Length: 349
Image (cartoon, rainbow, N blue to C red):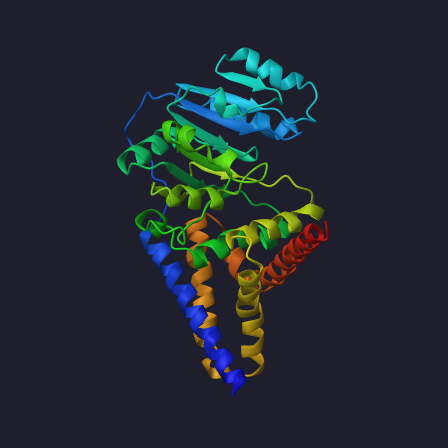
């Protein structure tokens, strides 16, 4: 009886997740390309990593933007040394400047009407900045958070990188992030955050929240708690992200990103693993095989819809779904145990 009850719980959860996926697919929460043009100054703020090669790729795409009224402030990493290539790049265009590690933050020196925080491992396309400004003005947003389209190559990356969008678009109806003021409807990524500069300077969310780089999810919640508007959309063709971590650290990074979707809540993440990864195994061992068409069909359709929303290859995601679920368990379990160990270590201190 207990097993049958658990199977029903698994199926209900599967239907709920499918419903969220259908809502996301039909509502199409993508950042559109708008025809309007603006001349507001935008401050692009970038937290650099020690590897300047990736940063130069991003800077080149910013320089090629059709939006010209920008200033780009690059916060150098403390281990970056003397980046001759970056110095030469900035010398060619006065809109770009390097900022060495010192007291204060890069946004203190920014003069734009809007702040655009970009991750190093991103590249942007023409139309992004105009579209961000248009969307922010029309809906009176304080924060517009964009999830970049993931550039994926290689079998190992196909097994890991789609997991983030699979979990996110299976659980969070993105359109409701703006429509509902409750912080419960929150999602975000640090890779592309667009703020109204005047409001940002008043609240200074990066300073108020703990940690060197506060998670975007926490910032979205903080914005909503001030009764201000925030929105999270998929970047579509306007912004791409890629992973440059070595193969050994990629599974760890993926687990950390997945745990952030659950607000770093260990209990919720563990329960999700039991239902999503453990549930199908239980159904396979103790379920009428003639009825397996229901869960199999829902999973198949979910993967197709999420793939199209994320700009990923649906065939790869369908074929690799069982392997991806194994990597989901491995990466998220690793992140959960690391989080527990971190908490235990703090308590001992």
